[in-house]
Length: 256
Image (cartoon, rainbow, N blue to C red; front, top):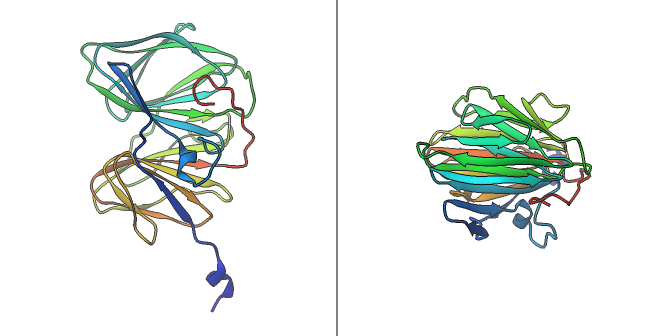
């Protein structure tokens, strides 16, 4: 028998229920998920460079007027529907299931968001990453993303030196997956990093003990090792590989 195998630390899955932290602005509503809340006695609402994952709703005909962000990386992930973006640099962009947007706010970036009266109701994730340094050069990325393959992870953003189609300025990788009922995938992982998983739609079980993670619930996997995820029903899930030791800043307009 391999003694090292019997003493090896198994991955721990710390689950969190649907968040009860929300804001209702009528036609625009948000639910704020804080990955740090999954860990008992954790003194930070975020987890390393991942500050918060915001479930955002915009009714048709909604305008969020021009406003500024500073010192945070803001990712708009739209699995269905459209989110329309304007900014003071003259960009007029549409983010949908075929595109991803990353706003590298840096020292300051002004933008507006909108749905038109003819657009469908929008439910999306807006992800806030803490950059490694303050007052970086501001900019925006808006790129087509690879076509999605069922039951497989799609790598959408990562650090500046990664092979993902878009980048953020800290140690976070982001993946999504449309998982059919009964299908299983292994969570993305990296040596000495941890993984945060969020169920956007559906429900899954995770790990050898089949830990349940339901609709809009999440789990933080600490300690190294493969963790399998099986869909209890057709599901859409996202996962973040996070370096918890990465240097971070805490002066973002929203994420902090």
